[in-house]
Amino acid sequence: MKRPRRLRLNQNIRDMVRETSLDVKDLIYPYFVVEGENVKEEIEAMPKVFHFSIDKLVKDVKETYELGIPAILLFGIPSSKDEVGSQAYVSSGIVQRAVRAIKEAIPSMIVITDVCLCEYTSHGHCGVVENGYVDNDKTLELIAKTALSHVKAGADMVAPSDMMDGRVGCIRQILDSEGYVTVPIMAYSAKYASGFYGPFREAAQSAPQFGDRRSYQMDPANSDEALREIALDIEEGADIVMVKPALAYLDIIRRAKDSFKVPLATYNVSGEYSMIKAAALKGWLDEKVVALESLTSMKRAGADMIITYFAKDAAKWLTTR
Image: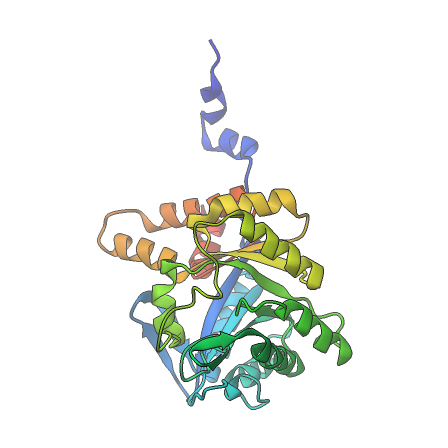
């Protein structure tokens, strides 16, 4: 009789033969920064995730760094919005000021900035809207300006999430022309028009005021298209590519890892996080067990790094188990 259970006999043996490892160094923690002072307000749809003013943000990022988490992803919510998202690319913008404050206080923390216009536009879409349609090419200039302003403020990496065609190439061109040839781009390459983004819309205050984002984000039914999108981003200069969301797209993560030998990120998005949190609060499941199981599944599928709101909790769990 074959007895695979021999290698499951106790924890030490299970650790020895474990095929997939999850480490704190794999994690990236997202933050939402707002105007004001002394602000730390919990986001209702995302328990234990907060809106921070810059002063409170810096304090929390220090705690994150001390947990061994190597990088954060920064989202900004401005005090005013307009049709072209002008607060996204001014040097005095909320993200730009937050980046400067973080890098001054914690120079070794890797600060990645989300590059998009949806938090900054009055209509909530990711680009310039004309006649009810998001104009791809007119948006590119503003996306590139936003990325450049973040890097000038001190961002270590930029992450365009708008899903406009050609935006990686435009960002690479403007960064290189300004002398920022060493700054990497983490591209949201296969970003799906997903229902799992619901809680994020509250966090980022970025819900579209009309229509939806299906004309630029990907159809959840498509797999081959994701590989085409990733290939284009690599060709245009992406250093890291991303699949978003994670749990419902583990097959895409696996296909991407098998097809492209580049660093691969995935985003464990707000809906995935909040479902586990809500069920745990009801006592329906063990939050620690399920969260770590979910994150491990993303690593097992092929992700090299995971953007997750569980990062801080996971860092603590991983050091105590």
